[in-house]
Length: 160
Image 1: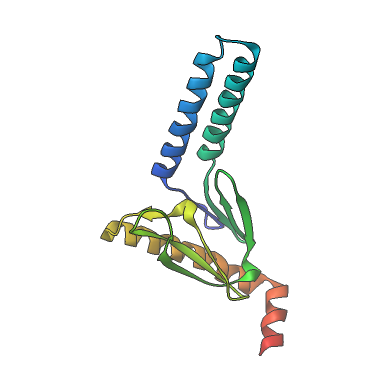
Image 2 (image 1 turned 135 degrees about the vertical axis):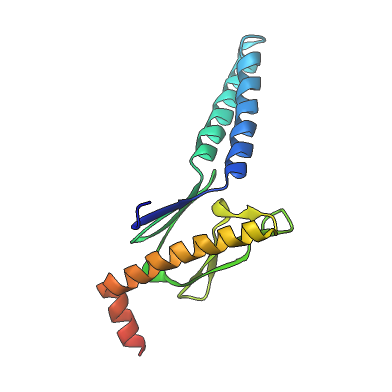
């Protein structure tokens, strides 16, 4: 494992989104050969839409390095620099499933970012241990960044 970067994703999230996109693509592809030109255009759109969802779903996840964290989802890619993060914790994922837990980046400005692309949809001991491990790996990268970043050092010195 490379100690300068980490990658997390939920295989079940990826599988669900890829399969959903695949179903749309398949429906569009099967019906593409029949009907009027308007129907064909509609089914071509359905095919492309499904394929895009499948491709973007396969790329979803959380990717972190010594500069920050990239959260990639189907409709969103968001990069958060370590300079903007004050703490990494594990908390409720605020997802649709009741027992969702996920890594949470608490930002310097008081807001927080829930890393739903790495969420766990269960309250088992294994899920909690996996989330804690992810938190620990993210925290190591954040602390390493703080140690080596001149801008972060200046900001901390100004606040002291």
